[in-house]
Length: 321
Ligand code: ADP
Ligand code: MG
Image: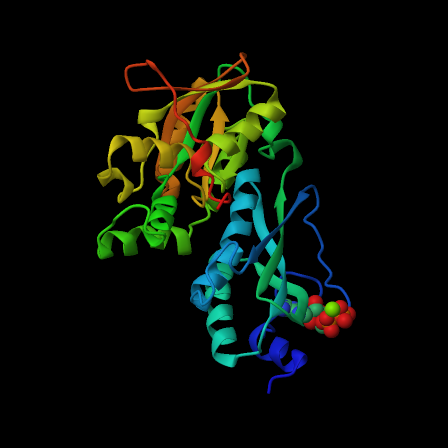
């Protein structure tokens, strides 16, 4: 039987000095910020039966737990530095822990982000990560910085994670291979860290947010904090490859308000269009221009011809079950 301390030592302590002054093993970790930089800090919790199904593959869970936190740093334009892991586990299962920490560290290493501490306890499966990043303070991509006239952009594609959920729930019939492909988006999100760094570092964007609860709702946070409104072109929203094969009503609903996409939504002056497209190419992350920030409050949708659309999105909240 693994004790709490064996478990930490075996699966979470790694040899070799990281960039933290002091890592796992003392009452606190010690982190020295780079002079002149501001720390960006965020926590995200994943709870069994709420954010993932019981019996979820532990390697994917390790990836996703960190990915959703990296996505928050990306949305701020911050560079990942370190993270802590608070873990409640029903049982200390070595196979589960090996797979979980394997998925976690594969993504952590890809972003140079070091595990510096945490807490471990017995209890219903619950994973909480706090992540620390750095950004030049004047460059952080804040939600309150959108301006009337800005273009609205989104990275990557939207809606496949929500489509996978509909498929798993039996709400939308999907062929097995299509469901498997869409489910990849739900289980293994890609945080857009390089794009966030480029947008902030080159001063290309005004405001940004990561899309975790659906574009309409998350853009709504930018609008509220910035005291602005927007019009989105529903038919310019980039659908995921599986969603793209579905009918137009589902495409519009799930791109506009799907959930679990972990793409970036950002606003930028029209003068930056070419530089933003170039940054997307340089990062290997497609970007699409999907609307415009306006002085008039509220969120409006139009179709490809510019005609107003009434998208009733209320029924598509990922978290209202
Ligand atoms: P304390 O009792 O002082 O809170 P703990 O005994 O809980 O410390 O933890 C011992 C050390 O192990 C601490 O440095 C803590 O940050 C680290 N730690 C505990 N759980 C984890 C975990 N799941 N991942 C990484 N580090 C952990
Ligand atoms: Mg403790």
